[in-house]
Amino acid sequence: MDPEEAAERLVSKYGSGRGSLIRILQEIQKTFGYLPREGLEAVSRRLGVPLSEVLNVATFYHQFRLEPLGTYVVQVCFGTACYLRGSPQVYEAMRLAAGLNGGRTTTEDRAITIEKARCFGCCALAPVLMVVSSNGSERYIHGRLNPQEARRLVYAYRQRAAVAAGYGSASAGSPG
Ligand code: FES
Image 1 (tube, helix red, strand yellow):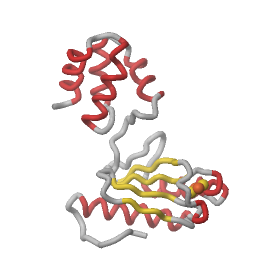
Image 2: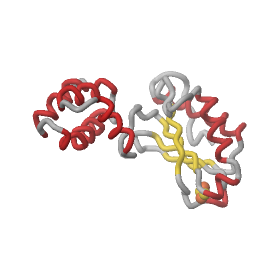
Image 3: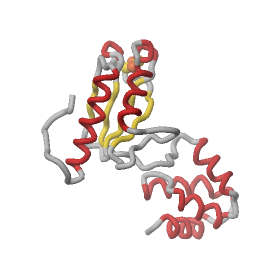
């Protein structure tokens, strides 16, 4: 089922009009893992709600994501301890190494998503980041980071994502 078909089915299920918009977006996200642009356009047409309004709702609520998740989701802590110990520099170094610009959070190859996060409760290791695989099977914490180490992690997780996708050679354990 493509996003267009999904929108058609959901509008028949929930009815047209603004009142159905959030429920329909929730279901589209559940199906695709994010809100594809074609899906938003189809919802706009079928509900008779301007696309700008659909986009406003999709960007206002944190539950919605406009990009697919990468194989690995990197969450850089922006809690106070991490922030003061350099998490903004770690975050920027990772985004640069991953080739992310503008509002994008997921790399072209869908290997990595990089996001800001709140305190993980291990502030003694600041600055800290957590990496979670999008299928939920892996979770790693990396602490006492600096921009150089952060860049290394981008390459390591990108390689790991390639292995998971069936390219490249495998290595066991955490990239840390
Ligand atoms: S402030 Fe980053 S882990 Fe607590």
